[in-house]
Length: 123
Image 1: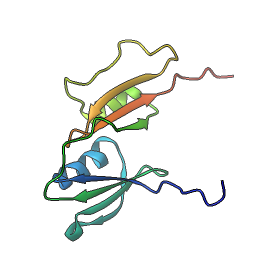
Image 2: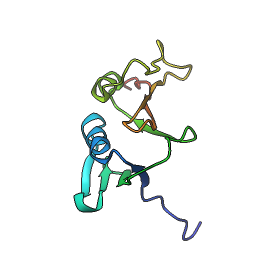
Image 3: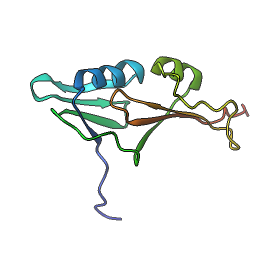
Image 4: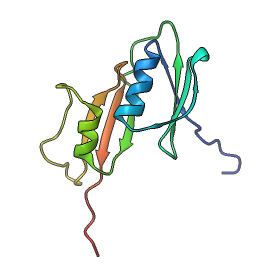
């Protein structure tokens, strides 16, 4: 479709800006592309996707309607690095397609899904 819009980023409003910034950077390994402390703005990227964190004095509860899904190369390492708590749902076996996944939460309680495709056999 000509002139179809392109999603630039997902914006997350938070009253815990510093904590969320650290979590997405340190736990998920995203890179900080822009950080403007006085405006409470940060743009994080994984190289292709972007999340903007906007500091707000009060925000609504986390939505249960949206989950941010992150594809990872090493599922076990990503889960450990995310420092997921006891409430993390980790399947004991991959699903029927061989996909491993876990749903965790960021510091604001937003749902984050980590998943890894099954390893491909070398040809």
